[in-house]
Image 1: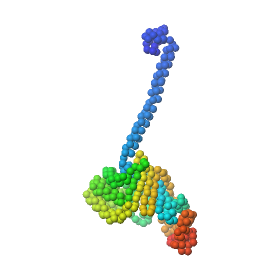
Image 2: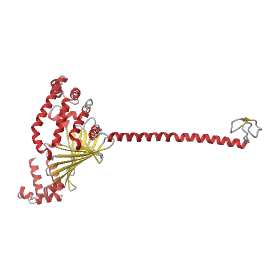
Image 3: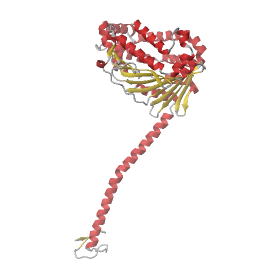
Image 4: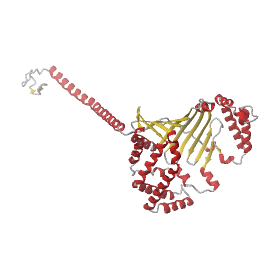
Length: 448
């Protein structure tokens, strides 16, 4: 039987044309028809396969754009105060913190001392882990005309503290808190050891508190002094405004029963957990916590009465200094600019504090990545071992001599010393800065 490729009617094998539609049924046409049908089916399948992923990708991209535009709309329609507090809240929850801080000065007086301060820069690099235990590093660098005078690193790993005086001594130093406790026979301090067990602190969240009331109180005091400028959150206020903000926050707190209850529950729970942890506190500290719980946390009513009394005392103390603050309130102004992205990450912050005759500027960059140097106490000098050691003299001498070299090689500092006749006024008989430091080193060594 020959099947018509046009109408699917089955004809006799000897037929030349289709008995149904009249189309030709020759072998060549039939084969071509099969090829066309197969080709059409293949094209349909390829089209179906080809369009399917593109279709879903297109939907995904469209959804993402809608989400981003919607999020951007919601975020940028938040008030500046809401945006700033959202950024600060997100910062507090980060597992790691990386910061670069630069501090500079602008002194208005036209003298050498002012010039010296204007050429001075202080740079900090900070890293901290927001995990169980304390781990972080803090690197400070004092520069004059971009030349380093003093550079040091303090690194904390649990109860071990490492100190490196960069370019002043080839080795670094360390202090072991646990070792000091053992040698001194002191009890484990809650204040010291709680830092090494920050899981407790992280559980203190006060999430049941309505913080919007406090944000609103701040926003109402600042008014037009908190706003968006060039995509950043800009804040301007003086010392008097700061005092007013504190007054308003206290008023809100006095009426906030949920805050008082939350503090009672969470602090009591925190102390009870710490008290049962032998790795954090010893028996003496446990007894102190027990006394605190019995005296201040006997019940909710007792605690709230004590808290209310504390707020009254704080207001009284604030009233004592209020006249002094009022006198200089307008003379001390603070301006800050926060660059916050659409996901509430505070990328940078710029601060400017103005006092009579001078301005202090500070910039904070949260986008940097600070690597913490690994310190090993086996390669460090134990400060405890230096107390009764002759080695301390040689170490001090080397550190002071290297510091002297840093200072005397800075032309700007030498210029300041010479122009202000520092040697003649305060160091009779000393003819040069080198000689001054030589005497200084000898005196320091003599003390030890």
